[in-house]
Length: 545
Image (cartoon, rainbow, N blue to C red):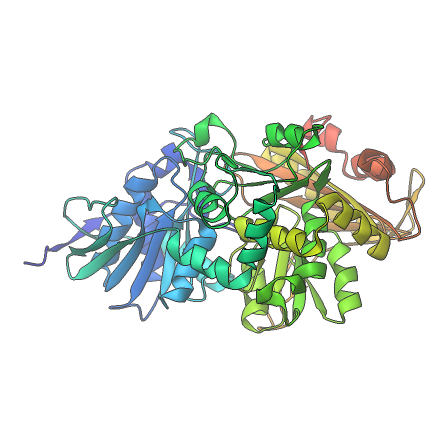
């Protein structure tokens, strides 16, 4: 007998506006009565034509993941989906979820993650909806979801026991079926089609050593299966490989602060040949060669310049897309290759149209997200595997490849300064004050620098014609340097001010400066222009990448 559908009365919450990557709040906030149910029902109410179709559900394993998956399954059944694919244990990395949606032609997917943010009973959680192309929902859908959250009166759910998420196979849930799948299998098979696994395996067999820090997060099972299982890397290559609800008490953000142990190992005299890490939900990456940290902006450019060495990209690239705050290093590669370069707002959803239209093949963000048209999310392990393919093909260390790249294209010295958890009013006041001065900044002297132009970046989508305004304040200086100010949409408490600092040196210029020296005048200019200390009380950034 099919269990009855319960229609439960509820009241709206006023704060369920999705950010660039879904709805993110602290766990106790999500644990408020009907908070999860309201948002999930608002997703379903904002969609059309999904009756009897397939939905993908999974998450990064953080605290509260299993509980929300059970709610989502029962609500999906009550709302008329015909089938749900869910990762075993409730686990699916964000790029793997995108791949499952695409491979199985699902209607869409619900991904439970707060990305690189901490996990635990008082830490971060998130819910986002991905569409049938495998990518994050576009703004027209997220706006519709938000509008629905403000007027919701009830939600639909089956009143049935929880399912066993650890038992592979098909289980009935009302009129819907739930299939618990291997979270790694489809993704690993896709990677084998893109990269030269025999060449990488031969490199490992020849004594190549690697360290991969999975940060006690979702990428652990994927990296263990692919790196150690299929490519033959030594056992123990993958560190912190078991996903934990609190990420082992650590912050699963693959940068030089939170992955310092890996960085220190890679700078040591007996360092492995190559080091890498990924984040909470598996969509970001950190690349460190022996003796060299490669910035995400440089990594994007170097991957694009060498992508043809991998079988999946041997035919060349259609174009490269980067977020506006990402350095212009990839622009110079695109120019040399004679392909398009697209500058978008921050948020992977902006790349989806370009990928679907065949205008771009590789995309990247300075926030350590890189990916291609194989899925519609950034993909941390994909970037690591492309680096391994390049290393195997060129038979050179990462440091030599980076230095050769700078000699050919020049070097974009780059850093990002994050001021985290600052007062939201102070942060908005800082940005508003800068915005009010934009018209008067050109020609202004700031120390030894002269402002050439200043604007508030707006993006005009070349595919659908939509416009996204107020995406970050850019101050460009004579000589090609720039500073960008932007408030982040990925945190859960207070505001994060991100300041992006970039200076270009041509191939004939000084390519071996310390980054802090190359950017010193720009860092001082950023403080002078934005009055960061005066407005926020912060004299130093919390994180420098």
